[in-house]
Length: 223
Image (cartoon, rainbow, N blue to C red; front, side, top):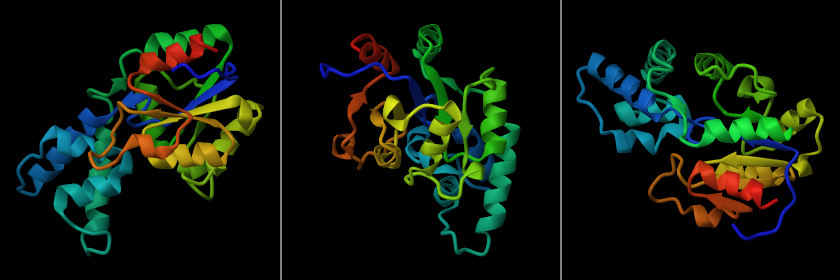
């Protein structure tokens, strides 16, 4: 937190596990899904670590099947339908982000989201949370290559009409840091996110590591 740096002109966030805590709803939905198939509930910490990998990871975890299993596609669609119906029961901004986003708006720092979450679910979630009017939202539907490729981040920079070098990207997965670096942005690793126990965030080579959202505020104040 002691590095010297210039104030970013914009900040881009990953969605699940970085800006919004969606794990409680993923946990609920996966256990509803398992219950339908006669399976016992999984513990929250087990599910939380897999959320950043999306619906495919949820199905693999919940049903111990690989993507080439004959039932995988049907299970995935059933999970997605359940998730859309339960997308924002307990999901919300991580504590500390509401005032931080207000501060960004006051400072004139643009902010938006670049996610590997499909637009249907991203928009439904943001609408439910009153965040539908953000400056930019880039989803897999909008690009030909997803993170860790830099294409989504570069598209967001173009939409904001800002040079990538003036932007920070915040994420809780190594692919986020790789994508941000490849796009020429400063990278911020969110250590509070959905990081598997075997992963060491110190090895991601992010420009900064934040342990809580308030640490991002501290970085901005030091700019």
